Length: 351
Image 1 (cartoon, rainbow, N blue to C red):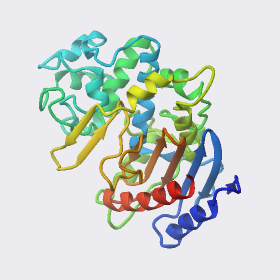
Image 2 (image 1 turned 90 degrees about the vertical axis):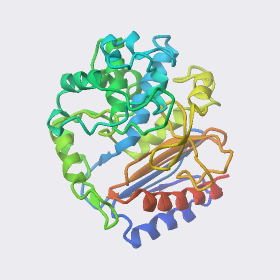
Image 3 (image 1 turned 180 degrees about the vertical axis):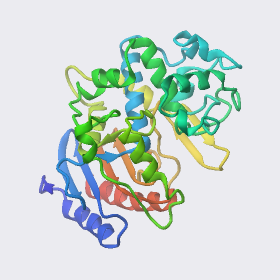
């Protein structure tokens, strides 16, 4: 454990972390906080004896996929409103010709579901692409927000590959992990690092008891699901968020004008499950008073959650970056309550 900056009451945060541990909400977790690019706190409790353990981060992976698109926009390779058929002509079949890059980034493309793709095809990228090309939209672009749990990564990953002429993983390394020195964030895991991946555990309130086993197989066989299969550390994610800064000087990984664009609300509304969303470009914004980031109503905060286990966010005004990762899967309401409480504490202490 590393605590720094005595002016900040970091012990309150540590006490909250330890309370959750004592109450068995998790046995393995990591919390990393930075303010204006300075490390404030790193708390780790790892139940397994692993040096530099890697956490499955589930849908936090989506921010890393989006980050490549942000960089490509910065370099002029892509525009938010570009139709996907500009880069991938075959995508336009069955009425998908008007779907844009922005529609996918904001979960409004009309093709959010992957139920019709057999599990056996998840490891075959070519088959996945053919399946996406044959999909028929559920609704028109921009008509409705529907969370793209896996299609988000497959579609954007293929666009990235079509532009770069390389695999998604290669491009991610070039545009994101290498320049930001994210040495422990990856989608394809080398054999020597498979044993460093922490195993997920299921709480009594989580429905899918087989998810840990499925994810373990995905990592073991190096099946890449860009929207959900990355592994990382709280420190790496915190460093990534810290790089999305509107106050840095000199050469920036992402300029202020692009940060302003990705953090603006591009889609807002209620999905078919009755859940209210506010979405930027590849990031989820605070939605309502009781949001998962513990953010005030008008807070300029961006971030993403990972199913049942993780949340990471950046307050662009106060320059607070936070990553909280666990390995115990909870239902989303329980996870939200746990994370919201500790995030409200963090905001009250670090202000």
